Amino acid sequence: MTEMKDSMRTMARPYAILFAIALVVALLARIGLAVMDAAGWLAYDYISASGVPMLDVICSILTGSAFVAFLFAAALTLMVSAAGAVLQAALFAKGVQGAGKPAAAFLWGWAAAAVSLVCLLVVASGILSGVQVGSMSSKLAGAGALVLAAVCFTAFLGTLLGAASQVMCACISRAGGRASWNLVGAAAACGAVVMVLTVLTFAAINTASPNVAAVGGLLAVDCVVNVALLLAASRFTK
Image (cartoon, rainbow, N blue to C red; front, top):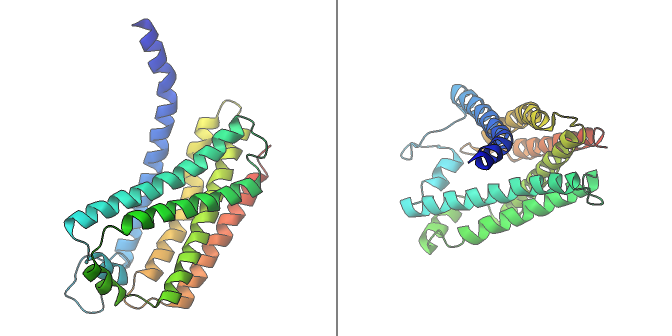
């Protein structure tokens, strides 16, 4: 019994930090949603109205079972993305050669982004029927625009995961005895920046007729900021 208590005490701190980081991210997400709601950027499901936002029209095609499958696909994508950043930090903590370098964080961030999106497409390909795909296709831009959008989103996600990996390595490198709280602080500070950019980008995309120039410009800003965070974190990584 004593051994069990000791092991639980040892594991309590890491789990507490994990839960604290999750709560910080959830709080930032809630703030972002509140801002979008107040600004009118967060649309609700008024399918019968004219000029509804693009994402509302697309998501209205999902049936109950397809919606559940889509949630699974999204969860898998997020899991692979988060695990990629954590893995880079773990390899750095173990002293694996090259881990924690900006180039490694950048390249493996892109790799994690690409694999997560492939997983999403693999699952999504079995969610919708031919009728639903046809209905959705009629509401989307042409194939060329969709490919360009996929490339831009991969660039955004790849640089974001690279930045997350490097920030985690920096927190471990500058740990002393505070690696855990460094991670919580980084989640709050960097998460606030990502939240603001995500809100603005989502607001530009989720309109009845998205402005391609505005969306492209915001995605470019997202990537630049992500790379800036990566390079800034690399300066604190020993």
